[in-house]
Length: 204
Image 1 (spheres, rainbow, N blue to C red):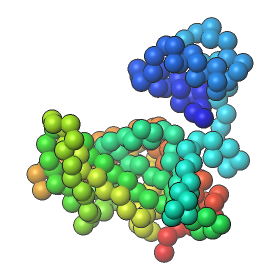
Image 2: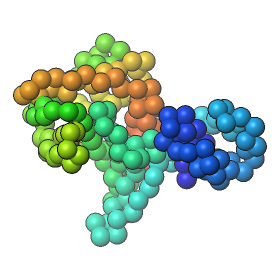
Image 3: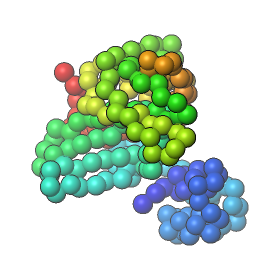
């Protein structure tokens, strides 16, 4: 179930209607009285190891015996940012992290690498494999989905604790820069917290 904070944000940016907002808020928080549409009366609870799982959509794949954890903030999939999600084999205490970076724009970049700067710390990831699709006519999409490496892990930890962070995607036809928003940094922080709670450690 989505948190009241997530529902409020979706309403504020126009993703859901007023009637949907009211229904979802009452489901998320039965004590919500609806006095103010613009401000939820739900109490914001700090995310800790005890409740971090509430921030995630959990899907079990019985065919491959894998449980997938996707942060609620990345549903549906977000573009031009860093998506992090977790996989865990059934009956295993050895989860793994996946790094999903999806570029959306009006023209192909043929992305080969990225640079992330988090509070002045620079991280470069090269020789990346981006698949390419064109599904909407005008917009093009380039996707990269890979297992998190030790260098990636250090980058994610830096982004999670940063006050500001920027993603640059580098391609054969140019570069594009995107701010890594506060909500995206929080989602990365939550993913790392859950990963460690599940028994995950820094990749070798």
